[in-house]
Image: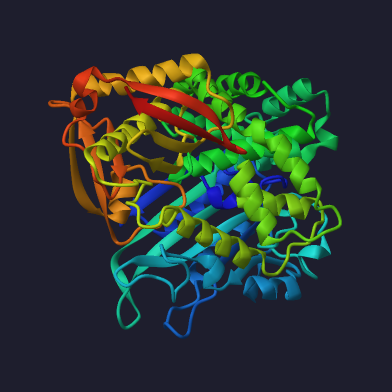
Length: 561
């Protein structure tokens, strides 16, 4: 899964999800064995025409005293010669130099460390002290697509015009970074990777990766659902096919859409797919038709996809339902920009009110040729900071979380708010995020993200869950954690827009003997000692009102009576 490629999807060769072929040598064999084996695999096993193969090697770095990889180049020269192919060598240097120089009659090209050096940090200078790294040699397949000068005056293997696709990369980790530079590893290693989808594309010699057997059936289903043909809606169908395939596998591995980490990547994938489906005129109920097609493609090798098909569909359909209800309004708002610039203020409004990820807003502007103001990013960040500040100071002199005092009644309602927050997520889903609260001695008020009105059944279910936790008499305690640990490792809930210091206090509400707490939330307090105190005198938790607060935000008022 390569989320960083998400905006590249739509061309003839990029996907966010792919299967990687690979082999490793940990000091066992090196270039002399790896390169001939790779050439044999590509030409004799996969059956690629060697005349369409081009390779790149490392040009060296004088600053770090790392030599040019002439050894790898000579091995390639010998292998091409056995196929009666003359392999002329060309020093390219940087990618930009390649666009200027072109490739001439070259077959083997030397690039700098930005292209042909691997380490965790990046090029030679970015390799972390203590880390291994080394030159690599990449193999490219020539699809024969005419060069487009918008990508540069001349074509070369690392050009983005689509003529060449990288189908394999052998990294030769031969060095270790030190304080003084680089030293040779006692046992150099090999790390090869090759994308299955690109190898399949080369094997059938098709200029379009999406014509391979792992993707074409998805396009066929999209044509059937939309009544549109792939040739006239190529980009949209490519994006949908790739993103739903990626989202399906994420769901199988337990990821659900959310606003952080892997969940955010999944949410972005699903929402982009839905947005592109709109362009096909498909506005509802298409996910449950596409996921079974994906599952069927992988049933032999990944049977868990088909086995969890219903679960996957349920997760994706839920996200679809959430997003579609705000998408129409958001697009309508966006379309008002026709002929105008996209400002940071508008991008923030689309994000805050309509749930548009800011990246999707900028993509939409690009697609519609709407100029983006130079200050848009700064404006957006400024408004985000102001919103966070408002969240922190919404009630001057009040405790964090909108607490208006610290009497026992305030503490009870504050504790009930935590229970209700988790109950709302249990009933409605993980998209529920706190957007504000206000607590008095008479009642609690709670704002949360939710695109539609709650049903009477949902309200009753939330009430029942809260009262059950009151009856269970959960113990209430807190512990301080480093903020990153609390949020990323422990999974503590927080309030949308809040900014925290280096350490936060996390309140836990847990039954005796339970494996994990029912509620686990960042909060400054104060609370009662145990939830049974909320039910003293036979009182029960009851929601008295559920209403709209603003677009995409609902408000609940509740009491203990």
